[in-house]
Each structure stands twice: as structure tokens, then as C-alpha cells.
Image (tube, rainbow, N blue to C red; front, side):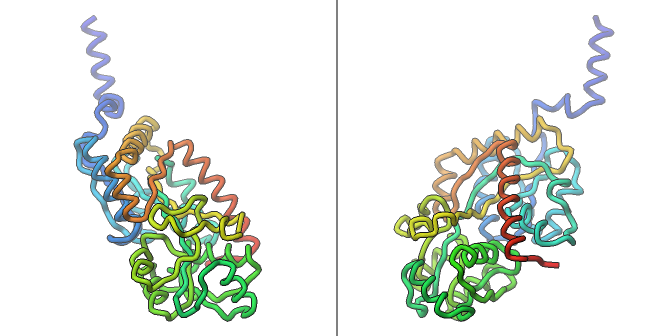
Length: 318
């Protein structure tokens, strides 16, 4: 019996993942965000990370690494559950469809952990355009093909693709004015240098409240809790127009399934917390928890939908 116990102890010491599985995490967890500090993804994840830290009784460190560097930092990290990526639909789904030159491969380099939040996209115009409804905008755009312009945070960004979707759905043609980032794109719109755009609610909420932008419709299936008076695209007459800007946690490929499940469970519990929900809603974000399996299926469906739009509109970044 003592010999058997000794062998068992020796086996467990040689397999730390098994020996320490019940205690995960035993050290700080790092979440890499491929967006700058203060971006919508960053502010939302910091709220959730604080609650995850409370549950784990371990620090959850936010590491802002904008762009491809963020993806690379996680894909090359040890696959032990201690380094995670907060990926967005733009980086995990649409970027691979638009470019063959990415330095990372989402399906090869990462495994799903769970969705975190969705930011409701909202179509707004500058007051000088003098339209108050989606139908008025469509009529004006049809009368002036190529005469209206919209700002985006760059080619292939959510604002760009959602406006491509809008044009396809309405038979209109407008001109994209791409900027280097969401901040400049929104500021130029609020300043009247461009006429319209679709942006996440947190990015334009202050401008709407100040009367600098006119909200026409949200692109989500339900109205935004931040602006309940604004109709959905479906209510405005575009029944097949639905789009959410989503963010989710991913781990490096090879991360033990048990660790992934434990992280996902704590993430979902954190998103269910009333204070976390209230804080996220105040930002204009909506908690959107999923299991790893649900997130995987969601990404497959999202990829198929955007692949069709990219092909139909002949969109590419290369």
C-alpha cells in the first residue's frame, strides 16, 4: 500500500495539470485585449475581469496590445489557461475573410472560451442631413447615388461591413470615408465632416445625448436598453438586417479542456452578477454569455453569413 501511494504521488508530481487542476488558477490570469485602453472592448472587459478576480481570489491582469500583436502574444503563449485573448468578430471572423495576409489564424491558433458582451450598432446621421427616419435616409440616398458619405474606423471594420450590408439591403450607393480608428471616425461624424455611420452605442452615446447626432435605428434584434426609444432596423422596415458587434474570450490552442471549462464557468457567473450587468448596460453593452461549445457554433454561423456578404460585394483588403 505505501508503495502504491508513493507511485501515485510521483505520477501527480510529474503531471502538474492533474495535480493542480482543482486549484486553477494558482497565479494571476492575463487577458490580452487587441484594442487600446479606453476602447469599448477594454472598458467592458475590465468590469468583468474585476468580478472574475473576486471569484478566483487571483489577479486578472488586462494587457492592451492593439492590432495583430495582441493575437500573436496569445497564440504563442503557453497553453495553460493563464493567458487569454478578448477577440472580436472583426478579428476572429471577418478579417480572415477579407485578407490572406494575417499573421494569425483564428481557427488554428485559438479555442473558444465564451462570449462576453455584444455592443449594439446604431445608425446615426449628422443633424445637417435633416433626416429623422431610416426610410427618409433611403429615399435621399436613392435620389443621390454616391452623394452621401459615411465614416468608418477603416476598411473591413464593423462600421464598414454593416454599411455595406445596409447598401445591399436598400439598393443604395454611398461613399466610405475610412479613418484610423473609431474615435476619429465618430468625431468627424459628430463634427459634420461626414454625414452618417453605423457605430457601437458606447462610441456615440454622448454625442446622441448632446444632440450632435440623430439616431435612426439599431441593428440588433432588440432595442438598446441605452436608447429604448430608437427602433430596430426591422421595425424601421429592413426585416433581414441584424448585426451585433461581439467580443469573446479565447485561449491558445492546446489549452486543457478542463481549464477552458473552468474559465468559462467563472466568466458566465461574472456576467450574471447584477452589478456587472448594470455597469455594462450603462456603457451601452449587453452581457452575452455562452459556453465554449455555443460560442464555437455561433462563430461558424457568423462566418457563413459574412462570407456571403464579402463574396457578393467583392470585398477584400489585400
